[in-house]
View 1: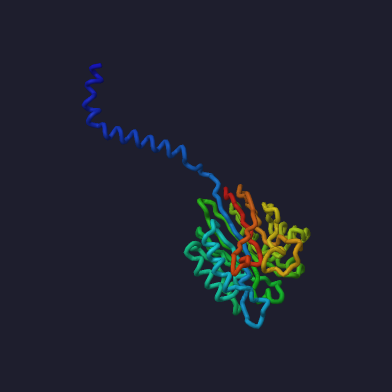
View 2: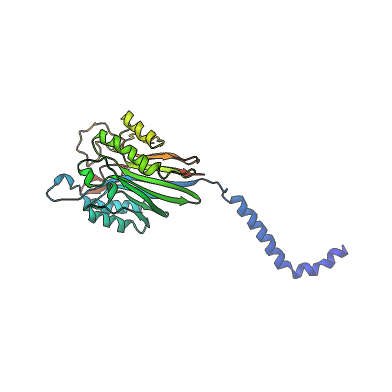
Length: 309
C-alpha cells in the first residue's frame, strides 16, 4: 500500500504522457483491424462505346447523325458517370474530337488518342481513351487488311497501360471492319500479333474492348476472335443482351428485328485473379423536342472488374 502511494507523484507528473500513449496504442489497434489486406482486390468500372462521331459533309446525308447535337450530351453523360476508364470508338470528326477531349478533361484528366496519317482525327477507328486514373500510351496498329471507308478511318487497335493500387493492367481498344467477315477474319490475328501477344506479360491482365463488329451468334468467327487473342468472354446481365437493336433511334430497322451483341469487353487475366464480375448494357438517352434520342447508334458495355494479383 505504501509503495502504491509512493508512486502517486510520478503518475501525476506523467499522466498526460501515459494517456497519450494509451490513446495511440488504441488507435493503432483500431487501424490494424480495419486495414485492407495487402492482396485486396481493386474495383474498376470500364465502359466501351461506339459513339458515331463520323466526319460530317453537308452533301452526304447518311453521315449526318446529329454529331454537333449529341457531342455535348455525351460529354455531360460521361462527366456525370461513375466509370473509371472509358474507351470510345468512331471519334473521327476533327471538330467533335476536339470538343470531346476538352469537355472530358476535367473529369477524365488522362486522355489517350493517336494522331492519324490522313485528314481525319482519331486513327485506329477513332479510338479515344478517357480515364480517371493515370494511363499511358503503349502501342497501336493500323490494320493492313481493311477496305472502303474503314481504310479512311485507319481502323486498328490502340493499347494503353495503367496501375490501380499496385495491380498493373493493359487495355486494347479496337474497331474492326464493318460488313466483310473475310476482312475481319484477317484483322483478328493482326490484333493478336501486333498488340496482345506482343505486349503480354505474366501477372499483367489484358483487356480487349471495342466494337468488334462480330456478333456472339456468329459462332465460328467469334470463337476465332477469342482463341486467337487468348481472351475470355463474360455474360451480359440484361434481359435484352444486345448492343445494337431496332429500338435504337438511329437504327432504321423494322420493329421486332433481332438485336446483335457486337461490342465486347474481353479479358485474359494472365495468371492473376482478375475477373469481370458483372457486365451490363448502357443505354444513354436524351429527351429532345418531344422525342427520345439515343446518344449513339450503339449501346455501351459496362464491365465491373475486380483487379487482383
